[in-house]
Each structure stands twice: as structure tokens, then as C-alpha cells.
Amino acid sequence: MGDIDVTGVTAVVCLVGLPLISGVTAIISHYWSKTVCHQEDVNLKHHLLAAGMSAEEIERVLNAGKSKQKGSSSEAWSGFE
Image (tube, rainbow, N blue to C red; front, side):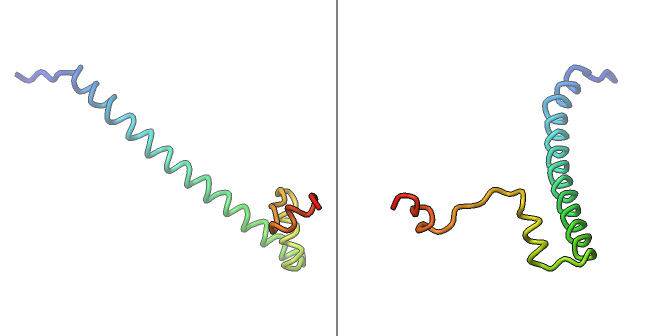
């Protein structure tokens, strides 16, 4: 009468508990990573401001490693004239 079905409890934990814990962990990890990246970006901007750089210089430094995005359609088609 006091026996617990260990197989049933184990199955419920494995089928419900583990995916739930994994999903919550993935969500927390994702947002924690975004928070850390944002904080590093803010720290870099504060450091550049403390070094005496202007807003235009900071923008140039932050965009230096990013690929250039396409401009207007006239710029995109200028090579075909």
C-alpha cells in the first residue's frame, strides 16, 4: 500500500521535468548573454567618452567592423550605367 511506483515517477520526471528545466535554462542563458553584451557595449562607450572622443568618432569606431549596408537603390544600380 505504501509502495511508490518508481518507474512511473521517473518517466514523468524525464518526460516533463527535464524538457521544462532545459527550456527555462536556455531562455535564461539567452537573455543573460544579451545583457552581458549590452553591458560591454555600454562600458566601451563610456571608456571612449572618457578618452575625449566625439559622438561621430565613437560611431565610426563602433561601426568599423560591421559590413556596409546597401544604400539607396540609385547607389545599388550605379555600377550598371
